[in-house]
Image 1 (cartoon, rainbow, N blue to C red):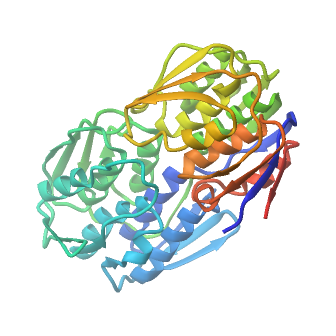
Image 2: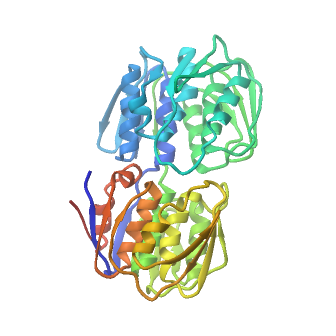
Image 3: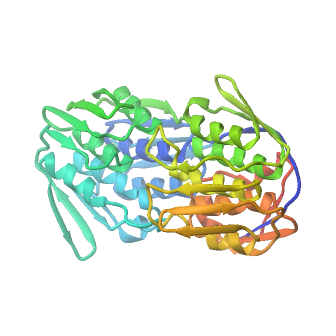
Length: 416
């Protein structure tokens, strides 16, 4: 599976282009099932989660081919409606295919999803939304079986603004008879991008980016192209890496408005942050200060996916920074590994108190999940000595050539 060896203590300097967003590419790949022709997705990140999504599309009968940073999907002929257990276990986000398969074929059979174990993820919200649209839902032998001769527009009130449930509701409702109103919808930028893609196929959708989305069912057109938006969590990772190691970096191909809570926090910690329409510059002398509590909330609040890397940046900050995790109940799995590097962190339930230390030291550590693994990379860049990070397949799920991009900034990181 490979490991990262990171010799810390090197300042980062240079320019890095941010990859396409994992959390936008995956629902768009699922939505390509609704097209009657070929979809070309540009700026599609070369990560293992996208590889898994491509395998799922091929299993369903689609032609799916990568050419550089573009992926072409021909979904004109679908021969299956199931996703086997092996493919589901490769990524928890595979549940996003549920609504699209159901809408396209009238039946969807999925095993319970795999991926990172961050605590309970309420797949029941997805199933309840599909049931409101008229689907019959059965769970047996570890499988989810959804069937519907016809989907009918309705009012779906999500109990929480779940990103995945919002996306599945949009996908299924796009092919339903009549109008569907989704309330308490997630407002993330990736939801807006999914709406834009579906509209390019001929869908009639309004309201993405607000808590209320209105979808009028329709028949979809054929060929279309789109470009995946920049990955705001990858951008946050590079910013936190610079804050931890010190240095000056310029990130290109980013959407600064999607990073506002992260850039605000790093500015308060003592970094210099400047933005343009599509770039972010950050400078850090490596000496940071603690700030008021960082509380994760649905967008536009502080993103839960950026919490681990921000915690890694705060490890050497003067004073104590408090983190409150409101999205996932098991989001602090990386803390034990950071403690091995000399961090001073105390956790109780959803609260973590990070007291800054003068220096971090190298240690053999293990990635516990995607963002927790990225946090270990950020910490190792600011630590003394050579840190060995194991189980980096978790990191590969969401970061495209992370070591290459960091080496381009002057980091000493090798994949072995």
